[in-house]
Image (tube, rainbow, N blue to C red; front, side):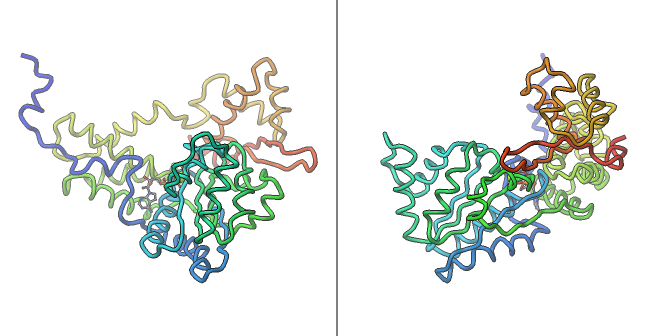
Length: 355
Ligand SMILES: Nc1ncnc2c1ncn2[C@@H]1O[C@H](COP(=O)(O)OP(=O)(O)OP(=O)(O)O)[C@@H](O)[C@H]1O
Ligand SMILES: [Mg+2]
């Protein structure tokens, strides 16, 4: 008889108490270390309670540092506090067009007569309803919205509102149409990366939700937390916890040990570029080309590097280097000529820290 499923039939106990707590979309009950940021967001909304217009806000910062979590938490508290405010959270990656955004708002308002109506018609209906109360609209991943015209409409037509925009790179604001920018006049809130202790604190708390008590050894937790701290991304830490748990289970260990954490770390190496030494040939030669032609526009760089590949392919290559934190893509305004992306090399210091 096959022994492949022996551990299951023997009823080996799982190390996971609540595996969902390690799911990317899990919302923890408590948001640690972001009290000030949450207060800042709440302060922008508070004027609405006095029937005044709220302040708009742009939240920015690197991936995986609690921007979405903190914003959602404030909205949840607001919802518990009052019925006088309409609250909408929209992820523009999932709803990248004005039509999809409008449909989400219709759903929120329980407006069902959406069939055969244009975006403009629906928007008119919605603003009429929203204007009966105050409104808080949170657009997450705003840089994924294909056109920002809808923001213009909402800014113009809603009376009492706070519009919260969340984005990784605040230079997105530069690209925004100046007519929208001058209507938005947002407060700015930057999320900084967590320090070592904070990262450890967040991941430790998560192990308490996710695993049977005392399953995760301090050594494993520290290795994972250190890696997550270096990348700045809590998501990586949560992923590593889950992987280490699975590896420990597959080895029928009752504890997650240092060796399990190290194996999990090895796995992540397979799909991430760690440093210049891990780059594919075409990416290294692009990096070389950027070193020789620093701080120029991406379109010019495209010509210099290899005009025989499409600009789209070239952009993708650039984005890969940006993700590996080897270069920076900075948006610059060219005045009447529009906008451009300037390709910058990251500081040597950062480059070295990858080795
Ligand atoms: N202070 C915290 N306490 C508990 N969990 C946290 C905290 N900060 C982040 N997390 C967790 O880390 C993960 C990433 O957080 P979040 O989704 O808020 O990142 P983000 O800053 O919005 O990143 P992105 O820019 O990629 O959208 C989530 O699973 C979240 O629950
Ligand atoms: Mg987010």
